[in-house]
Length: 307
Image (cartoon, helix red, strand yellow):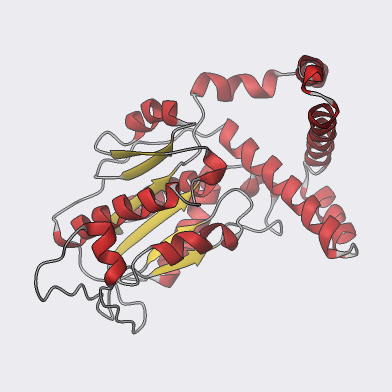
């Protein structure tokens, strides 16, 4: 087993929810995480909202400590915000700072899962030990699709979006209005992202945003984060990780399993019911809790090596 990590003084005992996730415990069993055991560092989705994990953390047994970490902010250079490797390096360095020695445990949701994969790759290449890696519906694009996106002209995208709107007019006024509003939002997001293609322009927009009220400021930040992080996905060239990676995929995105299997040949896959946006809600989160708890305990008491 990987050596424990010193990261503060915390002791956690098993509780009744552990019985639900793991089945009946042996008599006298108590799972204790020692003061030197690393928590599971959690990374939220594409907008980095900690609220994504509220129900998930409540559902997990208290015997599995977690700590939420954040992706880069918009204060970073555009070149780093749009490069998946750079995102992974920045995240890996932060985790290395939080746990400077011993074994590291990581998990991420959606884009956070993709970023955690890159962070794990960086940490492994830097000589650090990973004793748990969990990807929760991590975003992944087929390479052919990723390469084709930059070649789409603005006019072609406009035709495609207008075609989608026309195709849904039969849904009634409510459905049609929703599509039009969504179409407008995507256009604004694309134009804003393209405008902020340089550090100087991004600083200018940040200055304007800082003078806005909280609600529109948050909307603009979300648009920029989405644009930059999707740009990072377009050019992502991942290197496989060998080890018992835990990968939970929603029913909606179950086809992603094929691509993840190429990157994680020894992965254990779990299908979660429902759609991507509901993965961290009931009933999907209950399945996730149960299977992730089993995987974490197996890592705690097994002999595993990530390379």
